Image 1 (spheres, rainbow, N blue to C red):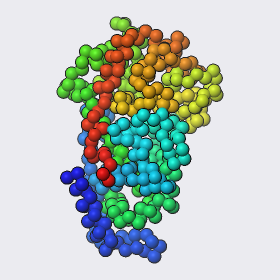
Image 2: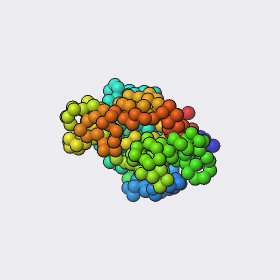
Image 3: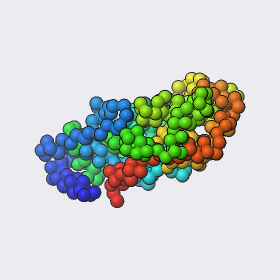
Image 4: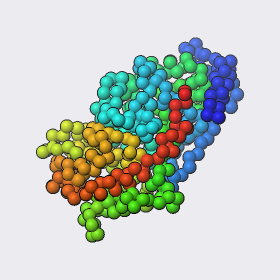
Length: 376
């Protein structure tokens, strides 16, 4: 069953070999029945207590479009030297991050920032650590060029020599037929839109299908979801950025915003080693700000922070407890930066926070065969 799609695609490209004729300039002209250019609509299941799914009107999901995107995601054909696929830096077992690596290897060499995971993109408003892309196709375009040295003039002729791709592009996007850079971006975007992670133990607890252990419960309700000034003890104050102020009302666990979390010391606004959002907006007030990262699947997406500075969750928690550094744009929510961090988390507090964070691991997502390499 897993390879049933391959037989269908084989039949499509064999038909195309006889019905789709090359024009004088080498392009493939449209020919044959309309069924060759009619895709099958695909509907995604709405996750529990996530905002409603909104698919871009100019890129509706189809079975063929998602399959095409999946093939392109795992195929190194899109890189200038045919050596690096998107999956080369975004691995499923690490929630489509480059697990274990502070920096990935692009065709140009090491990247400048840690590779973020890819999932739940339907609910993201900006992409990359600095938010320089505000739509998924723009993110795809940027990444292809910056990491794989994608050039349409080089890559499209390669794809046109592979009949299975010609047929699938025509089926996925209809007439006018043929392969274009825009269709490549849309296909990859369609595949990534299906990468939904919403079935962790945390989700099951929220749905009433599982129960936290005492340590997990305390890590979430008594630490993660409590402010540093809570009346009944001190919390870890994580929720402001990672739970939209209420972990029960929006389970995406991200605020779609940019923050300076006191990772970099900078005496003035122009002294940041990495200006982050400020380099995009050219606004000094944005210097040192980075997009709030995913904490879902955080157990498997180490190392952490935009520079891959921390290798373990324990190191991250200790940073917020005792490693905060002042800079002029430090987020107001970092209330304890003046003393270098919370300074009061006990060993049990830290263990309970880690226990909760591990409930966000979605093993079904990490192993879902629909997201795996279709060529294996």
